[in-house]
Image (cartoon, helix red, strand yellow):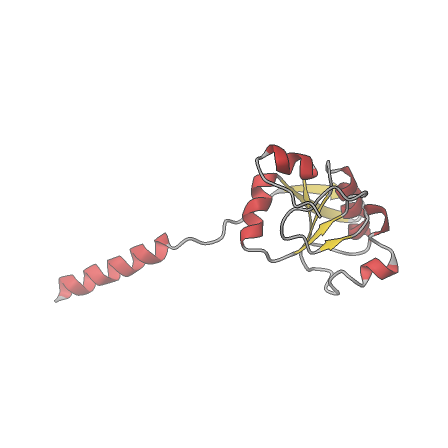
Length: 141
């Protein structure tokens, strides 16, 4: 009886350890005036999208497609306009992920949001170009 009890305890611990948890994505911290944002590659973003817990924004102009799961399209150079700020989370600690076609527009938008006091900004390094090069598709609308 004692062996069965110990075996069942071992089995429960083993099974609990085998349960998959969402991968923790660290990304690369990019220092800018006023704070930092996190840069992720296409594979990291793909993993993040499986357990999406962020506002996902395409900041590229003109429109050249979306990554599936995109919540908003806001031009990178207008992201801090008062009307556009009302579309963003009120909580400045909320996670926001930005992307554009090549990565430059989203870097500019990330810096602008950091200057506005946002603290949890993420950016797709290389943008949609890197996304497609990694074998992922874009949605055309």
